[in-house]
Image (tube, rainbow, N blue to C red; front, side, top):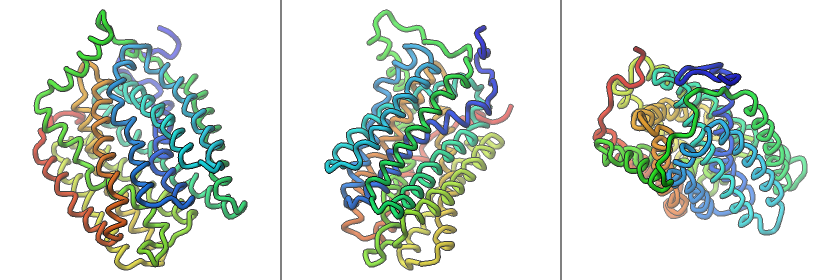
Length: 427
């Protein structure tokens, strides 16, 4: 064996690479999907444009299954991970260069597209590496750990970077320059992360190119055909698309709601306050929910916990209706309400992750998991695109009431799926 190489499905130094790998997966995603929303809101872009154009940035995650077989067929997952982390760092540096210019919206969106495609491809390799390096029980047991450090990246981005942007805006008086400094900082951090993974990632024996058909196109077709031949594929796709139907709409408007003036129905928080209570306190609650969810799933299994988890995810959305109706000024009250909602979401989302692992289990796990996450992203992209337009026409109170109604398709899709009662449970 080569140095650091381990047999297939045997974890090696798991705590050395799972936390950093999922921090590296989460950071560019949260920047594209969440930090960009705060930046554009600071730069006076409308809610309609923010929701529409940042929802389009989901597209690389939607269509990544189209090239996911390449990650299986060409090279090792380890090599893909390290190479793409350097590309992501370079893309972040480009955002720093383009945000101060007069055409910032057009140019930063173009760079965010590059960042999104690179990050989506990195996700394929990282998730495939995780599935190859850990046996099924440990995959379920560590789902809370990977979710935790994914959320640590979310705290670093949605909390730390947003907070820094607010502080530097106050210090410099220049919003665009403050954001350029933020993106320059995170570009450097990400390049250092790539260097770390160059040395730290193990070399599991199962991490090798999958034997491919004589013709590459035939290999592609075989991978996709195998996925769509899965039993009950229609119900599977319905669940993947609809489990987060309401959340997809809510997510795009939470930050604008927190920042918008009270006279327009928002809570009138500063960028620093948003970074602290939503990007930090809220994400810590989300992270704790994910840890509890992962532990519970490893102990009791997905079949027993699926319904409690979807209720835990959606019932707390009532807090947004109450916040919009009452517009409280107490920061602790607002933070507590957001923390409760985020804990429930983190707990409930764990079920979705384990369900995707169950669907992907078998040959071509990397590509099939990528296909699952592609449908997950499509389920976030399409509802989110219209969310800003809906809020502009309904106002925040009625919009959040609509989000509660929009949970109904999620419950219907959950009722229709079948779950292996043994998957993920400790033997």
